[in-house]
Length: 367
Image 1 (cartoon, rainbow, N blue to C red):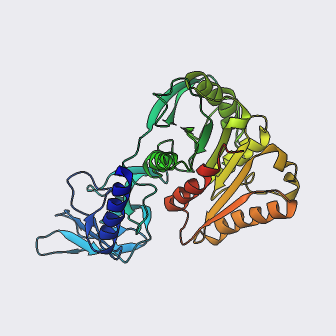
Image 2 (image 1 turned 120 degrees about the vertical axis):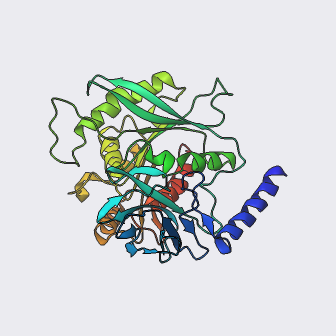
Image 3 (image 1 turned 180 degrees about the horizontal axis):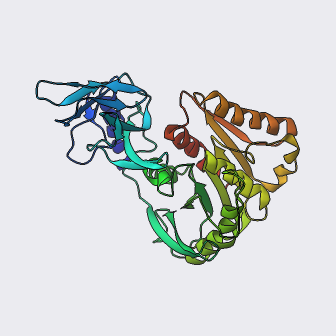
């Protein structure tokens, strides 16, 4: 009854916020009123920059601001696509973060971000359900001669069912991001909590590692050369996780997936280590990187993997969309069973990847 009442209240709240009310963005620093998201998904910005000569907002294009009667700079943007978007201010020609917004690591820098709500969509929002935890896990890497950090999601039952062991999903970020991306921009923990609570997903551990590794004696040919990072994953990360967490430490209970560059990493690592993984996915990135050819894939993969999953946003750049779609065609022609998901109306962005995880996670570890 409690959850039924909560669901009704949440639906009403979502309808109200998205249909009628202007709201301060959920990504604002606590206590900051602007930016505000309007019912039509336009966004109103207001910034204090008393000595500036020119101020603009860079969000889905550049939007020039003007001074209001109080001397503040303000502008209302055109309607924005739902989901999470990076943005910045351009003050006298210099791009800076908005002091009203939280900052997020993306594109290789810390920058402002804004959440544009979706109408009647709550799978990645906080709900009144049992919550798991995301834990920061440091580990020494003998290969890189450095301390590394990964983030580990444990399901809600982890600290109460102490005799239970869990399957593990290794979830990788994209280029210009880091191990925090899936938890902050991606809302991974809410997606998993909600799916587990409703019985759609198996309780699992999710490991989000930093997807870059520098090994002194390995010279990488390009950003698509994953030799060093693959060694860290196979020789150090997986053994560390299996020793510190209550995992089901076999290939039947281990999956790997990533977004964009992390998708290429996931497919490369899994294809090279079929004795370690039997569940595989790639969001806006899949196959073994540029130059993927049909002869790399054949129907024998159907015996090696319980699930192969690829996805893309329908509004991604023509090159990115074609990369994933062409790989889907390669698999179809080779007789390789897989799931191909297209996120309607989204670009190379977090909403594409949230939707992909929401589709992917319920398929995992079910035979």
